[in-house]
Amino acid sequence: MAKLAPMPPVESKSKGTRYLHIHEGELLDQKQFSEWVREAAKLPVEPLF
Image (cartoon, rainbow, N blue to C red; front, side, top):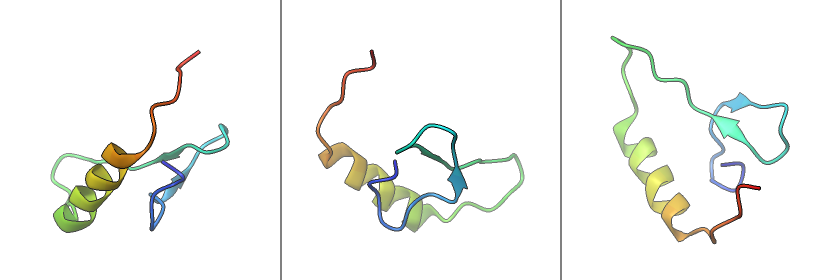
């Protein structure tokens, strides 16, 4: 997710990984979230192992 722009807000110990925490009752920026999903769908597939 670190390849998305702007990057999701939460860093990870794993380089190249970012997080977005979604909590019940919290407002979600639906426009930004949708854009991240569109961007991520265009990224090349990377092996999980």
